Image (cartoon, rainbow, N blue to C red):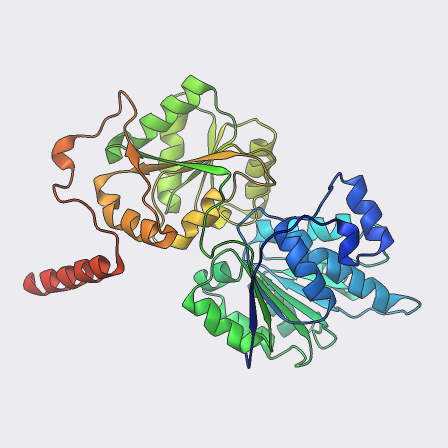
Length: 422
């Protein structure tokens, strides 16, 4: 990345028609009932139409998918006018199957008035069927890195005609260890292309990746980096770890909550939580990587249809779940990576709706909460739920300190302590 210009975007209300989108797209946008673009759409669409590389950060659920889908469709439709082509010209890389399906759905819906063809590629399903669809001709591919690389090795597709490359939820791809696959894919792409990098959080690893990917990019920050949506009410309940399931069951049953998304750190824990909720009379199912693709789709459909009240998920579900009017997200456990908290609670409070994010805090979560508060640059006040008050004998005597210096001091103490125990 040789040079960049950063724009901290200050939103001004504009219309979709002012963004130089085609009449076909504007008509479709109007049919879908969208009156004005979101801030990330207002900022990103003109940059993408100009052909420049882009590095954009915005909170989850703010319309990022349409921000890159609309201008890509317009560019490809203009290039295709009066021409026959069967080459893949746009590649959208995403970290999970669920996000791949969601993004491809948006591409299909927005491109309904064009002759452009798109398809989704991910693991867990027949690679031969995907290869047959690719052979029939596709303009846009939405893919997870691993399965895309499988097709490249088989010779099922070529990326040499790619005009636009998109990394959606780029930080999550790095968290999931896709860097080797990304490097292998980059070797198959033309040097001259437009590259768009979207992420809700920016880390040092993302900046290093951007230097590989982008050429003189425009950088847009619609919101303060690594921030949670204002539309989400954040609540922290202090509770003993062995009473977390009982507390959530109580809230769901007492207040008749529907469609509650509960996050755990491990697959085994998700299964355990699910069993406890079911025993307490809450219709719940687990959602994680040990389930087959068909089972995951069935569980997700049951959740969306309201057949189950609680979906207990690992962070594989933190990206790409598109659930209408999801009002409640619960952090049963604070994530090991603080940025994942933002993606988790970003499943609620979407598209202007309000949401509630509840975090269950026990004393063994102390340092994770400190790291989270440092990332958010604010304290998350704890409260007690009557009947579920924590055992005060387990509480820390010393007040918590959240500054970077305090974190370094704690790390040093832990290192010294561990040496003393050897």
